[in-house]
Structures are given as C-alpha cells and as structure tokens.
Length: 276
Image 1 (cartoon, helix red, strand yellow):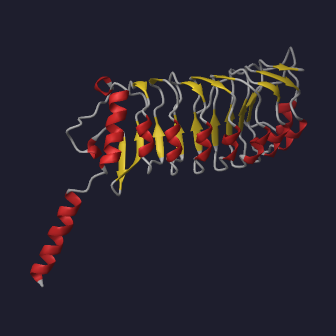
Image 2 (cartoon, rainbow, N blue to C red; image 1 turned 180 degrees about the vertical axis):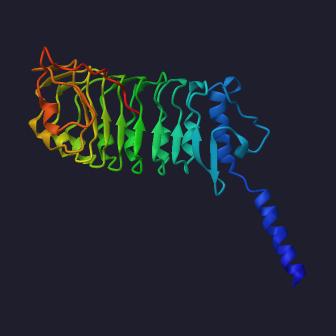
Image 3 (tube, rainbow, N blue to C red; image 1 turned 120 degrees about the vertical axis):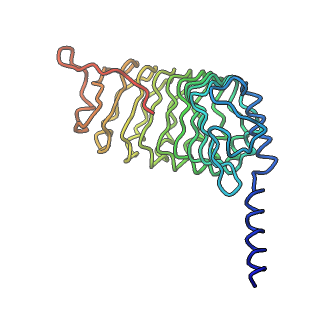
C-alpha cells in the first residue's frame, strides 16, 4: 500500500511538472512578441523559459487567462493569432505604440470581460465582431485613430459597465439602441466627430454615473428625461453644436443641476477628462 501511495504521489508531481499551455496558445504569444517588437519591450520575455515566467501573463489550469502589457513599449501590429487565446478574460495593451487595425479574430475570445486598447495608434473602424463578446464588461478604445461609425453591434453587449471610445475620429450618430446597455456606468464618447441629437434613450440607463460627450458636433438640446438618471454624477456636453451650452458637472450634485444652461457669470469651468 505504501508503494502505491508513493507511486501516485510521483505521478501527480510529474504531471504537474510538465503541465503547460497548448502549443497553439504559446505560438499565439510568440506571434504577439514578434509582431510588436518584443526584444525592445520594457519588460521582455525570455522565450526559452516557461510561459508562466513571462511578464504580464497569467495562467490558470494550463490556459492563458490574462495578458497585461500596459506601459510596455509594444510597437507594431496585433497579430490575428491573438484570437487563439480563447480562455482570455483580461486583455490590456494600454499606453503603448500599437498601430494597424484591431484584429477581427478577437471575436473568438468569448470569455473576455475586459478589453483595453486605449492610448495607442490603432486605426480603421471598430470591428463589428466585438459585439460577439457577450461577457465584456469593460471596453476601452479611447485615444487612438479609430474612424467610422460606432457599430450598433456593440449595443448588444448587455454586460458592459464601461464604454470609453473618446479621443478618436468617430463619425455618425450615437446609436439609439444604446438603451440596451442597461448595466452601463461610464460612457465617454468625447473628442470625436459625432453628429445628430443626443439620444433620449440614454435616460433609460439607470446605472449611469458618468456621461462625457464633449467636443463633438452634436445638435439639439439635452433631453429633459436625463433628470431621471439618479446615479449620474458627471455630465460633460460642452463644445458641441447644441442649442445652448450646459454646465459641466462632476461630483455629487442633484440631477436637475445638470440640465441647467451655462450662465455667463457664475458657471464653473470643468476640464473634460477621459475617465478610465
């Protein structure tokens, strides 16, 4: 019996020692390394060492579940192979120098809850395929060179709590279907080229805390229905083509004050800042 126990212990130790991610996932990581000039990263990878020693990589049950390479001097394009990392829950490439388009293969990452590609040099349109990431809670694409309309497919991401698309070159209108994002807490579309009226449907977002629409080409009036947004503590709609200017408000204020027109003498100027 003692020998059997010893044999079982040796078996589990051996199995654990050789446990590793699949070759498909490792190849995807190596493709990322090569495509983004990995040798010049601030914290680079030693490809000869086990993947669980690589900076910014988290592994659970032999699957890559997190990549966090923010502020790491990534420069180049994201490879399509990134779509092979199907167990990813978090993907953060913020504050780098990544160019090119957002790979459509990201649609394969069905477990993804956080996608952060902000502060890069990404261009092209926002892939409509991102609408397939139904578990997504945070989508941060701000401060890039993205163009085109906001895909209506994103309005199907009903678990979203943060949608930050500011400081790009987005055009078109804010989708009326935005009311579907019932869990949304932060919405920033500032510093784009969005046109049309501010959708009254935003008033249905009962969890909304921050609404930042400054520096666009929006027209019309601020919907009075916004007074029903009881959790709203930040509202910035300045520098648009609205029929009148409104006070920019940030902090604990009664909802009604957010609908007040800007008074020339007593209005307090508040800088519009992209919220993370």
